[in-house]
Length: 447
Ligand SMILES: Cc1cc2nc3c(=O)[nH]c(=O)nc-3n(C[C@H](O)[C@H](O)[C@H](O)COP(=O)(O)OP(=O)(O)OC[C@H]3O[C@@H](n4cnc5c(N)ncnc54)[C@H](O)[C@@H]3O)c2cc1C
Image 1 (cartoon, helix red, strand yellow):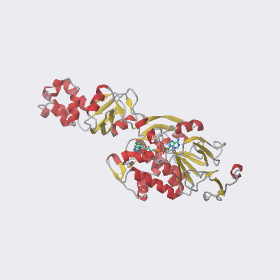
Image 2 (cartoon, rainbow, N blue to C red):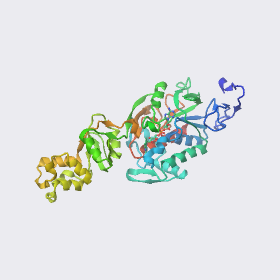
Image 3 (cartoon, helix red, strand yellow):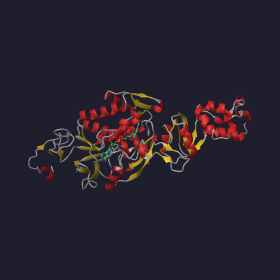
């Protein structure tokens, strides 16, 4: 015990707060009675636990659960007054909690392979087993997407309860503002205390897990704290960009979207020379949303044109040129290919005469124009809804600075990072939560 810990102010008691971790004698931890929202008898301690987890979101709670089950004294700190705010909102409340196809190719970041070890150690099947243990279940929808049958709130509540049963404590309504490693952290193999500065006092622990997420969707707790901590800790960090966020359009393209607001269909959305996604597309009063648009937004750069194929399963030029359809009016043929409202709205952007012409009578240029309307509609977004409505963010702590097996920092032993705090962003479809579970599990096994 160090000298500071031995000084017991008058009127305060020395209490053994946490049991031995089995590696040595039980540590005496000095406790003072200061009102935290931990409950009647909770205490400020010289050492506030074996493991301090900053952020009680999906990754933080998963990490806490596995660390506590290994006998670690775990304290989770979060700025929110509730745990897992994004988790509770996930999938519009339905919680797309994992994806059966989880693999590095579904992740963005400078080093998608970084995800491989943690995903292999804690694959979707293991998460589903954990879900069963929590008394919950999931079902599969399209593209391997798994949804929690009981919904997002139930999952967040069950995870928090399991953490508490395992011995985790929570300090909610506490904003983390700074983190100082032990003085000789870079030189030795760890063992000193990390000091975490919060808006309501300091906390100390030999192991700290950064589970503070990214800046996406600030109304649900997204902040740039990881970037700020990285600066102080001299850890490499990639600036965050919004991912999985809707597009905002302008001009005639916006007018079309407004006309069709609420309509959804399966479409293929791509960026010239870039990736393409075939999935649901939703017209909104601001532009385009739905899974296909959100997926592409993670790759989109300002000024880039979007290409939309509204009939991705059909060879539209061949369809329009087929001799057996020659007698059909262009309007009728297009309405067979696309939802009628969409066909009508798109046709208003062509000279009026074309809609009422039989396909066999359309000159080649007009057939080409019709085909482009259905299969190669283009618009350059004025922007995206940005971080305010982003379901995730790209960027974060550079993964090369962390172990892919344990999530421990290579240069600061005792410091771990999990979930979106790292430069790992998943595609839409349960990949982000699967990463939160897998990385949380990896760190929980190692702290
Ligand atoms: C609306 C919405 C819907 C989503 N739906 C899905 C879905 O269906 N499937 C899917 O896979 N992914 C979904 N995601 C993404 C997924 O929720 C996140 O990727 C995941 O929650 C990341 O987990 P995390 O623990 O790393 O971060 P978070 O869950 O964001 O947790 C970070 C925690 O840190 C806390 N925090 C932040 N700053 C501070 C600070 N200074 N001090 C203290 N605490 C702080 C926050 O309050 C938060 O609780 C969705 C995201 C949003 C916004």
